[in-house]
Length: 513
Figure 1: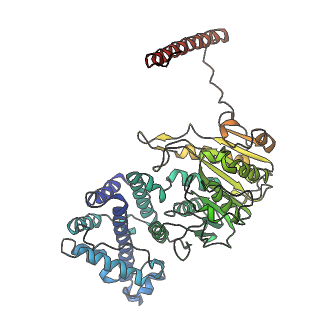
Figure 2 (figure 1 turned 60 degrees about the vertical axis):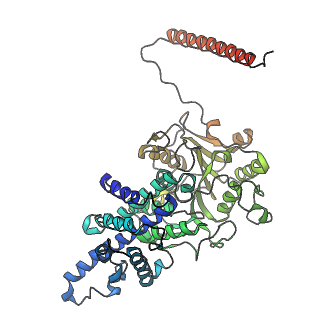
Figure 3 (figure 1 turned 90 degrees about the vertical axis):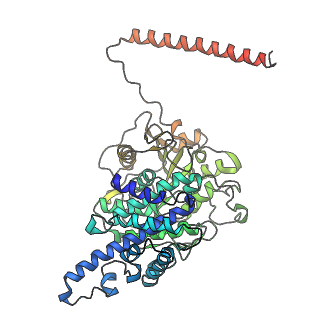
């Protein structure tokens, strides 16, 4: 997506900044962008039908659009009709009527599109300006747009709104680089893909993009998801609709832990970013749940409830990628250590990836990726290549030093970073067509016995070792040792000076010896 288009879209959001908070205006703007997109695509299709009218095709027949996978947009909902009245009173009511008409004529969107454009709290003059501004953006194929372009528009807005909303933004947005990394690691080219806390649907969109990039067929994957927040659930359905993804997000929103809409699903791939360290997950009501095969998760932290819920939904040869807070790798509190031990001893942990901090808009704490596999004995991986037997082995990847700072508080993993991590995993798994080797300081294959000796702590830094220091070109060994010793002695002297300063400061405060 071009920078010009990005700036225009953010300018559109700014139109309402002083009138609404971020939690509200994101839906106002995203709803209008969606409406503009479906109208532009409709008009492109309509122009083609007009050109072939002599072939007996009626450009005003809804079936002619649905047959080509396009939405039918009734006359009152077309963007030109709205834009012509953008400056007139009642524009909000006209937008609400357009949303209702599109839902009525396109059942896949029933109950999805936002409303409330005509409410008293929304400045109608600014809304009219917003409609006019978005009207200048061409989103149809004739303007160089596509479903992929609109997906980027959504991703851009989701990222911007997550930043604006702080922690609340994390409820619906997982950074694109993290989503892409999960998709590259799991390579969900065919089968059932499940996300039990799907947010805005980013995991599904990334899976679809990956399949297309590698020449696969979208009809080879089935999408299943669930989301507990009703607004975010609707946003996910819009996101899938504009991509043409036929996903099953359940009959309505709902908490997957307590009201599992896909109880019988056994997925080939699970990609998930559950809420970090959720204390208020209602664990006291699920103490006897059959999903807790590896131990009852603590009431005060849902991390291992999500892990076991996901394992429960894995097919016999299924694989899962989960984003969790770093504490999940080492916590011994409230039985979490025992649960982690049981999962390791069941030989389910395929790979652990430590990620750098500052990747998320909702939190600056570092996170990790758990890759779990039901069957590590082999099977088929990328492009049907045979995977090697990884029984009683786990790959540890320490990626904390990777990434590029976008600003003072946000980091992003680059394409090269993603490739390096995914390549190490697929080489180790045996389906990359290239040999795997441990890289000190970055990745290492570790036997379960060694993990047991570390009390089943899964922090990659414990296992990968230290990166080899580059040799100083042209420096003799004796000279290098002398230089390093001098540096050490100076650091020790500085430490003593700092120690004296601290003791003196304590004495001045009346806490001397």
